[in-house]
Each structure stands twice: as C-alpha cells, then as structure tokens.
Length: 199
Image (cartoon, rainbow, N blue to C red; front, side):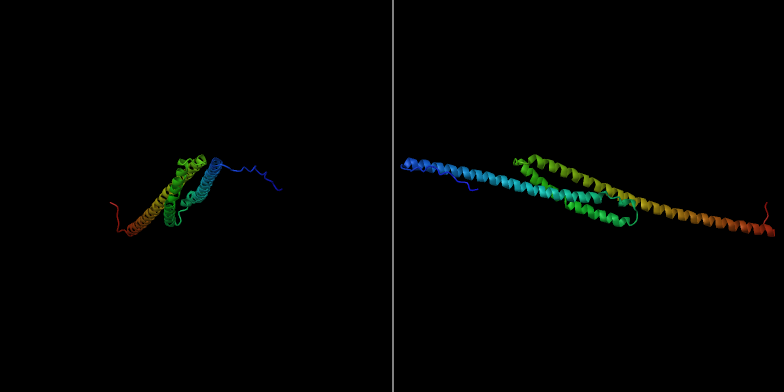
C-alpha cells in the first residue's frame, strides 16, 4: 500500500519579500517542530522517570512483604534456643534500619515529580502513601516481635528460677522428713530401751 503525496504547487520566489516570507514560514515551522520535539522528549523523560519510580516502588513493596512475613512469625512461642532467636531478630532489625534509606529516596523522587506537576502525580502520591503504610506496619510488627521475644526470655528465666526454688524446697522437705524420721526412730529406740522417759 503505497501512499502517494500530492505535489504542492511550486511557487517561484521572485522578490526579496517573497524570499523573506518563505524564510519566515520555514523558520516558524522549524521552531514549532523543535518545540513539539522538546515537549515529546520531556514527556518521554517523565514517562521514563515514572517507570523507574514504579519499578523501585514495586521492589520495595516486595521486600517489605517478605520482611512482614518474617516479622509475623511466632517463633517466640517456642522457648528453645531463645537467645539465638533474639540475636537473629536484632540482625533483622539492623537490616530493616539499613533499608530505610530506600523509602526516603523514593519519597524524594516521588515528591520531586509531584512538585514538577508530573502527569502521574496522583498515582505517585497514592503509591507513596501505600508504601508508608506498609513500612509503618513492618516497623510495628518488628517492635512487637522484639518485645515478645524479650518477654519470652524473661518468662524462661523466671521458670528456671521457679524450678530451682522448687528443687531447693523439695530438697529441704526431703531433708526435714529424713531428719524427722531419724529423730522419731531414735526416740523410739530410746523409749524401748528405757533410757528415755516422758516427764
């Protein structure tokens, strides 16, 4: 399907005014072409920045969801190896703290785009709000898990102390029973032999 372009009528430029008028027309069209190309380039640049923002936001959201799962596990309910779990949780908290620059960076980029009147400013604003909501949820769950791990450690230590006290009590009860039995046995022997008399 070949498209043929109808030839324009060729106008012979005879005077200086004709040449100047034609020059002005060409320069005006060229200026309009450059302006349209610049506007198109700006839109493409805005679109590219938006795609990078979206990619980075998606990566951060995926990372947050992964960490939310880890922060939501209830490993504190199992008291075995609790000290190692606390150390692992502290490393987890450090990792999250180190990753906080990602949300700050996205904030800066997103707010810059919004302030520049980006065509997707509403989408960017909603995306930032959602990321902040998820980030706050992660920090909340992280703090909650840390507190529960510490409470579990205190409980385990308390139960160990209770076991030690109960062992000590049982030992004293056994000793006092043994002593009482020995004393009663000796008293019985003495009363049988007649060397012990009740007054």
